Amino acid sequence: PIPIKDDRGQSLFTLAGRPAVLVTQLEGVSPNPPNPEQCRQLGSWLGHIHVHGSPLPIDQPDAMGYETWEKMLQRLSTTLDPIDQDIIAWFKGELLWLQKHWLPLHLPTGLCHSDLFPDTTLFDGNRLPGIIDFYSACHGPWLYDLAISLCSWCFDDSGHPFPDKIQALLTGYDQVRPRLPSEHDHLTTACRAAAFRFSLSRFYDHCFPRFGATVTRRNPESFMARLRTLQTSPLPGN
Picture 1 (cartoon, rainbow, N blue to C red):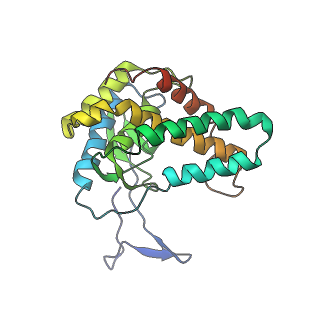
Picture 2: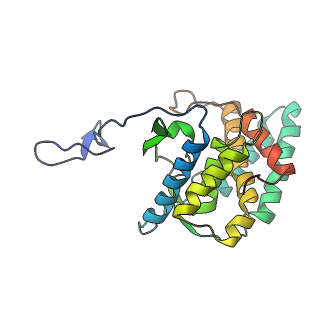
């Protein structure tokens, strides 16, 4: 979207004591479900975000990073009924695995969208006019940002992956920003971290709803199914 200026040439305003901007409306609708060509377009755009966003001085940490995962699990462990403890034990086991296999990695970092789901894009057919909702944007590993999109664009809600969509998204991304060998090697690990993040956060929001919040509660089962798949099988199409 393009900011709209007033007759004084200003585009940033104050509304109810908070910064506000009026922007042009983008064309298109969110794909549901996306097709392989739309996945390729999305991968290309994500590559451009990473390449062209890298010079920006973005130091905002990921608000849904490891420290937040620990805090969520601690609250879940101490407040939920015993019937839910098997689920908590499963989450804790995965967190221990990620501590060993994901957190120690040193991968390229920079500006990340961190929430690039189909509903944050607008397509006109197979053309991608724009990406919206940078509320969660932060500094982080680009591979993790890519993994978030792979998990949200290339699986169904039963946890079944679509290799053609995975290959298309990765092809679009690599044409703009070719991944390093280490990023190829650890893609499944990054996808497990991404699936864990959304499984845990959605389960947490389901258990502790924030009444009056603008966040829409979503069923955690779809990302828990993705995580179970990734725990037993490498990501196809990499």
